[in-house]
View 1 (spheres, helix red, strand yellow):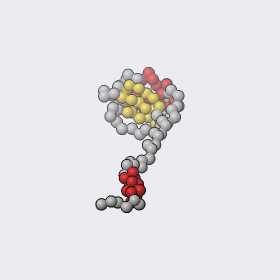
View 2 (cartoon, helix red, strand yellow):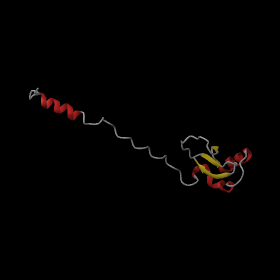
View 3 (tube, one colour):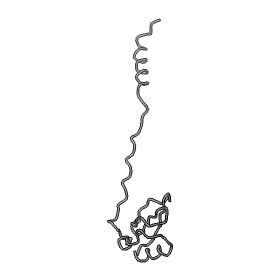
View 4 (cartoon, one colour):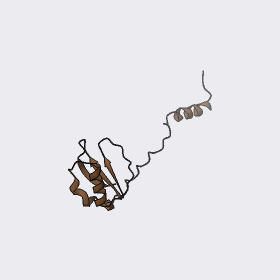
Length: 107
């Protein structure tokens, strides 16, 4: 059985249409990181760097916050979820598994 000549272009078009992949939209570029305040920032981290290596306590935290002049302080232990919003007036005190202060920075 022969196909009529006018059916061939239609069949060819359908075959070619099946060769194209699904339409995809390009992945959006990741958002740029938040602007960082220069080392120490305005949270006063540079004034309390001598506390790195000491054992954390609530009393020590209160003294660090007061001496730094930070509006807020958060102690960050390993495997603790924290927000990624940057606040230059917030002091981050990073602790290890034994509650030893490993770093102090703004954030």
